[in-house]
Each structure stands twice: as C-alpha cells, then as structure tokens.
Length: 318
Image (cartoon, rainbow, N blue to C red; front, side, top):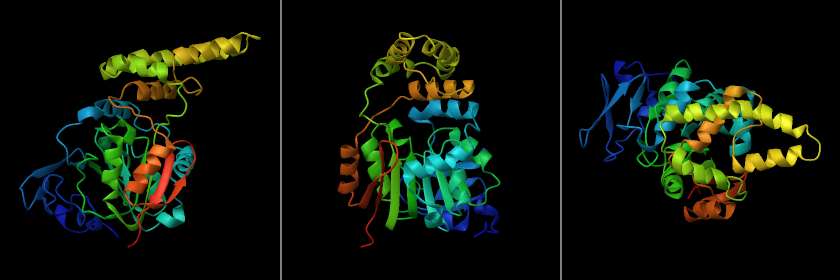
C-alpha cells in the first residue's frame, strides 16, 4: 500500500492512520495541516521535525535522545538482522505483509530490518531518538515513526500482527506494566517478543552502585567520563598478555569497574558504556518472572529465544 493522495496524510500511510487513537481519551484522530487532533477531547498532536509527536517531553528518556543523536547510525550493518532473529525469533516469511510495532525504536535499526522483510512497521520512541529514526528512514515507504509513550500509545486495541521490544522495557519505571500494556495492542493470533536485561549473572553489582550517581549526571558530563572505556581496552589487552597474573588482574578490574571493553571500535565502547550508565531506570529480570507476565496476559506458545532474557508468545485467536 502506498501513501494516500490526501495532502493531510502527513506522510502517514492510510492503514496506519486508520488505527491512530488519542492517547488521552482514545478518541478517533483527524488529520490537520500541522498534525492530528482528537474528535472527542480536542487535543492536538503536532507534526514537527518530520514526525508526529504524541508526547510533550522526553521525561525519563532524555539520555537516549542525547545518545542516539550523537550516534545516529551506530551499528546499522548485517549484525542487525542476526541480532533481531536471536532476540525475537521472528522470521522474514512470517512478517512479510504484516503490520508490526517496534517499541523503543531508537535510531530505527530494527525498523530497517523488518521493513526489508516486507512488513509495514511503526516505530515509537519516547526520546528524541525518534527524530533520528524518522530521518534515517524517511525514504522507506513501509516505515512510520512516532514519538510516543509506551504507557499511553496512540493506537486502537488489537491493531498489530507483531510487536517486539529489544532492550527497552527495562528502562521504563515499570517493566511489567509496560509489557502488559503492549499486549492489548496485539491482534488475536498475533505474536509479541521482548528482550530484557538478565538478573541471573550479578556482574553488574558494582555498576548498580555507580549508577546512583551516573544516572543523575548531565548527558554531556557522563559522556565525557565514559571516554575512559576507550583507553581501558588497551590496558586490558596488555594485562592479558602477562603470564599467570595478568588475566586475574584484568578480570578483577572489570568486576570493580564494569566498562564495555571487548569491542575494538573506540566509539562503540564509549556508546555502550554510556548506554549502561545513563538511563534513569534499569531493571533486570528472570525467565520465571517474565513467563509469569506472559501467562497472566493469556498468551500461549511461549518460547525462550536466544540470549537471556528473551521470550516470545502468541495471543490466542479466540
């Protein structure tokens, strides 16, 4: 399906406009010259910077706006397809021609993957990263990006064939509530997959202490501090070459000072370290806990996928 000829389509395809609802009162939205407005409550949602905004601020996600504006095209490569498959279990043939929701799309990395599968994909992000995704995907007909809040999504219930969220819900104030909210937008027979930080390995215990300070720092100050991950990579490589004592010392330093040190790319080491220490919220979870969420929502055919904690399920057709 192509974009409608209506000059008020705002670059939003007809099938996506059909499912849009007011996130405040759930009323139907009408297109206007500068955005959408609700027929019921009259609230307006402007289109600026190439996308429609259903939130007034970034709230707790400001660090991601800074992060993804600075690293706008980070890791858009063949690894994205592999990562998507490992963390969702969704296949190209299953998704082709379907309507898909990417929750926490960032710069649009996985929207890029899914639209190449032939799926109409809507990406939402609370942060200003949505602006980057809209810019990155402006020529991708199957992609639509909104700035929106997972707890107040602007869609009609049971709208999507597939929903996925990779590494995002654990950065909300209530991960369980965020997941359960998403299931209401899944069509009968539709599938949902999420990947969350694991609570099984306690390597992060020191970083949790540091995060009490780092998550309150300004994004620019913290980003400057995270430059330490650059040179420490070479320090650890040097230590590992020292017989007997080098590797234990290296491991001890990584335990006390958790940094991203295994990637040879300097910028990615800094980015990944910032990504870990900057978010206001960061929860960790177990399979037992997440399976309980899926089951409480009536989802079936639950599967463990790839790296912990990744779970996929389906909404029954009846």
